[in-house]
Length: 219
Length: 221
Image 1 (cartoon, rainbow over the protein chains, first blue to last red):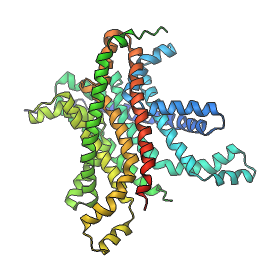
Image 2: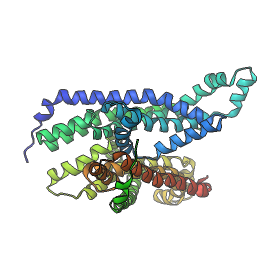
Image 3: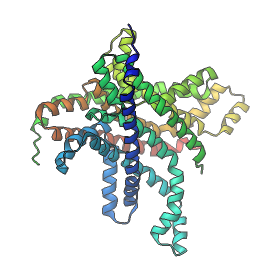
Image 4: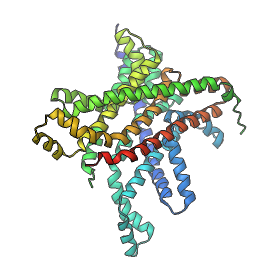
């Protein structure tokens, strides 16, 4: 078997574009899914039953579905529901946001619940409103506690962006698989694909370990 | 919007067969990665340095590479390297096991670490060997504490088998794509598939939580 690694170097710009799109998808999804997850968590904890039930249904649905299926589903259903011709990138982003918002909501809810009730009550006894106590006392502490979990969700998300390749979003996986089928340099391109993900993901995994050690809470 | 579920009803046998393969692949992949992950986790925690370093590297690499990439690499690149070719099912099983075993190993390491060091010292002071301490004192408590995380590994396994559709394993996801493409009713077909996956995954996570609730006291120390 003869290997020709020049194909990897020759397609460096396309691969770099793909990698940039992977990073962009990760960042944009997190930017939407953090406030989204917080909103869902607060809905779940609210006194209005209807909000709590709606949030629980949403979260349980998207936590219990394979992401790749949500991506396909969004690809076919979103245009019909919204009446818009969405580009593949927006569809993929939407599917990722639905998925990660559901996970973040559970993470943040656990974080908020881990702060003792007494702290909220103490804040309110000092004359703070419920919202103020939540914003100034509970959320800062909860945020610090859930940081390790959010960091590991970040790395999962980074890897999961590869799944939107099935609806032809031109991120790293899709780009590399396209070049593979055009050039027939299968082994070279697939190995390069794995290596690029590794180079980007390995430092992130190590960073998660560091955040884990730095922010761990032992009761 | 007019919904027409007749294509789903007409190919229900085909889709049900896919569901069966999803369950089979999930069960076998979960068992294999559990066994492999237990060994890797034990090796990483108690093994000598020459074993710990490569195992740590393997685990962290799997945390960095998407399962989709592992799947296509095993299916398309391994046959080119070795000359042996696998059916999509075996390639998917191998790739999922390689990927998930790393996660199981992390769970195992965290579980072993959660048993206080004093217990190991107490066992050694009583004259037990290191292996005995691990087997008799640490593992029984650690395994119970690992159960919830094993439950979530199981649901991740079921979800990840859907990605095996990209290497044409004829499981539920792949067969749904086929039916959707042939019938021109993708919305109905994918919605049905969503319902099927949800109906498997939701009870799985609930069942694992309930089981854990009944045995959690065994892991206390």
